[in-house]
Length: 293
Image 1 (cartoon, rainbow, N blue to C red):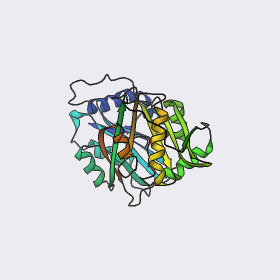
Image 2 (spheres, rainbow, N blue to C red; image 1 turned 60 degrees about the vertical axis):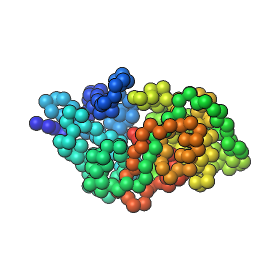
Image 3 (cartoon, helix red, strand yellow; image 1 turned 30 degrees about the horizontal axis):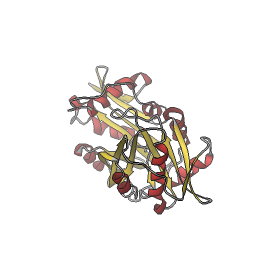
Image 4 (cartoon, rainbow, N blue to C red; image 1 turned 180 degrees about the horizontal axis):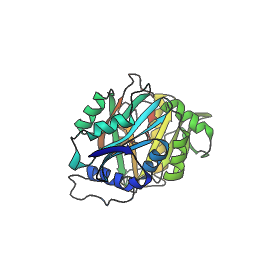
């Protein structure tokens, strides 16, 4: 008999095994399993994390975080040997109950996952491109006349800017990025005016790119500044790391120049939302990634 319940701290390694076996399925040279990523601890502590188990073995899990009026689905993963058995649907409705909040997520490329989210009331909005740059072969110069300024990690203005541009007030996530992912906050200034903010997360590697430095969240007041600020963030990050990852919404103006500069597409997801009016402008915002967005 399959049981659905809230996850416990002791479940995290088994939860990560479900993710791992789903992620590396079909790979001839899978990376080592490693330890559960820090964001799973963060979801457990500040959001909702549920598992489906049978005879004590975890078969599937799902997670979500609610910030203000938005609930973002961080994960739905089912072990490959137990897929197509409605476990994903059951867990999805567990962590996304019927309420008045906006539900959204970044769907994987698996058509079954996208169909599941659409049936749950979330509609496709735009593709999301996971990009990676490994050992760049060209010089990335700072766009003129933009200036990059390292911000105080406790600057309350960062949280305020992010809340306005990302559509969610989330000081807990800002603290997590700094504490667990070595995030360095930046301001982007043109002349005497701040035009954007961003985080360079130096310790936010992934299963496939464990040494990668992640860019995001990154936001600007106006779409015309989006590409320049993103390229300025890349310039800053390359002074501290050789391997970079960034997830870019399809409408964002930086997508083309990033690809022209040597970034490669690792995979393409789809942003889906229960709201016809997204909580942020995809031309002005780059998320922290598919986990906390």
